[in-house]
Length: 162
Image 1 (cartoon, one colour):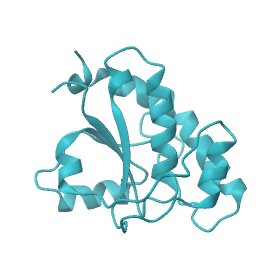
Image 2 (cartoon, rainbow, N blue to C red):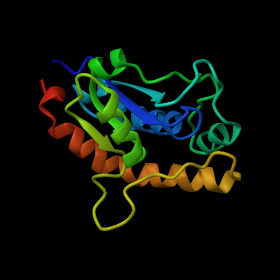
Image 3 (tube, rainbow, N blue to C red):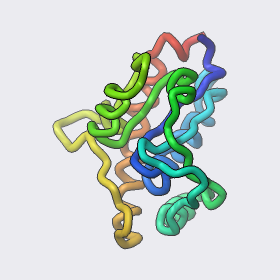
């Protein structure tokens, strides 16, 4: 499989974490050499309703780092998205577990966004839904901290190499 596929970033409702994480990861991949530069990053939610707008605080948190996600609309995670994905990147272990229980076949490359961050810190990214802007900014910063180790791991995947 070539890197013309997608990476799917997954959270619960696809209105807070995964849209932020997808935009940050897509921005980081745009600075990488091929084939990573051509990989498309999309987001979805394990219990998302389609067409919901992204949360205002997610928009504001990313606007502060120069990224615009105001046009994002939620989408549910589907088997088709899983089947077409080069990798699935989840916010929590419960998201990964839901995919592993419900997907047929189970995708081989399912990771946590923070899984490859060195050290013993928390590997999950908590849900900021309903919290103040500073909570969304803290989640954004956890994602930004995670991106170098995640990109390094993505480079190692045979499905993304030429």
